Image (cartoon, rainbow, N blue to C red):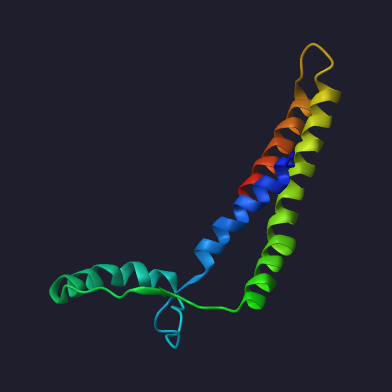
Length: 130
């Protein structure tokens, strides 16, 4: 059975996202930090406290129902992964079309070269988002 490369990439990203997102801190009532800077500044103090107590907080997996899991995975696939890879594929096709159009001549320069560079950057950003 032949697998479409976009589907294979989507499944790979989906499985990585699932592994990352299914882990929550044990203390669910704890409010998230309002500023990311506080975490960096407090890390040295936390490290010294952990060294003194010689204990660390364990992160426990959260049990979810099969229906919740299916709903979440469908959301991730349909709303995040597939659109991101579709955009990257679309930007890649646009770059390919521009390259074919402009590279027919001997040398590419000026506005044509800038258009190729700009589209390459758009494609790179689309892949970074995906």
